[in-house]
Image 1 (cartoon, helix red, strand yellow):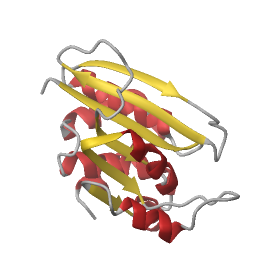
Image 2 (cartoon, one colour):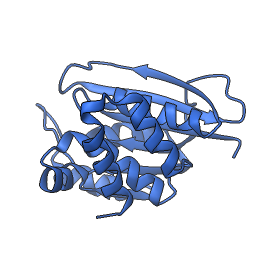
Image 3 (cartoon, helix red, strand yellow):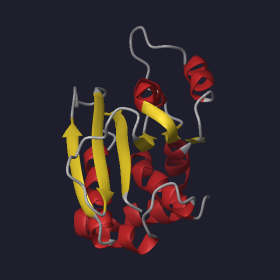
Length: 188
């Protein structure tokens, strides 16, 4: 693999920055060169958040060029739709089936219908699964990362991500985050 271009998107409070740090660390553990950039936007709870990660043999810039994303990893469906204009033909979408309505927001069903027109869409109810099985929907980021590793949507190995979780996540939250990752990896 020469390079992998990833855009993370969601809303403030969903853990985009922690997810960015874990993926950065996992790529470093795997021996890749890594560049990333946080584009917070209105990152207070509920505002849009975006981050770019590029990793591979030789990476010069942290920004994913227009049309060059290999994966758009979205924690909220409306944010996934907003990012879809940056997609290329090769772009895959991993989207948490979570909807945060705002004034003048499109209807959830309309957003999902538009998302279904995209290439390679994985629409996963990660927030609901984590709420039901782990009593904490915030760890949906790790569930989705486990899903992505298992489905080989992202070129990282399970062991690299587990090591990254231990390096990034505070010790008192590691077990819960590892459980969420393992749950996504097992596709349950």
